[in-house]
Length: 113
Length: 112
Image 1 (tube, rainbow over the protein chains, first blue to last red):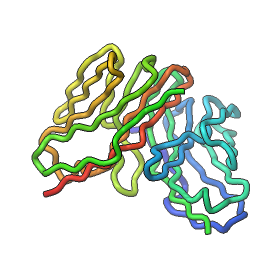
Image 2: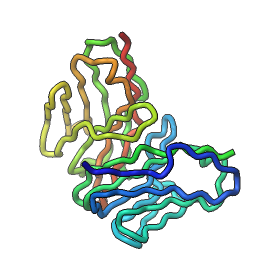
Image 3: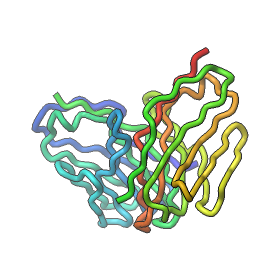
Image 4: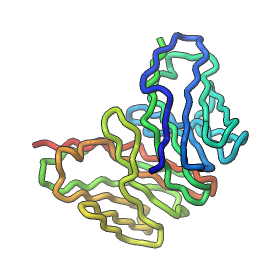
């Protein structure tokens, strides 16, 4: 079974802190994604990566950056956390750009106070 | 860009059928997916349909695709309380990047 693991289930951070959310997948998938989930808005794509050191902006990249130094690991960085970044963050991976079935981590609920 | 719409809430009684609907604007998707999210968890793939199919059945789940009307539906037969969750439709669109575009999610409430 494909496993996508996010480093934390719950995080509480202070406004202005730099926050790292880590995601690891164990099936050699090329694509990795970070989504944000808010009630009534569904999943919105923040950033995605289709190869090591490659990244593309999604629909809502402002206030976020990402890092993919190794194929299995994709990190989401909040440079200076703000209260409007309080949300559920979901990491996903898929095999290739053509094989689009996505496998999700369990989610990280981030609260910025 | 692609727009995917779902109604936000559906309530049914245990044992009834549930039908969750999804409409979309871009007809170039190859795969159309249904994901389920239980409380406090990530999303898990329920089923999918290839764009050249009209229907797919998988045990209690039936997926219908009407390409002319750009309408996708998920029918759950004999709905159980364990089916209470948020259901998302997702399309792979035309970008060929592997991105999925998600609807807002439909919360299914199953009453005993």
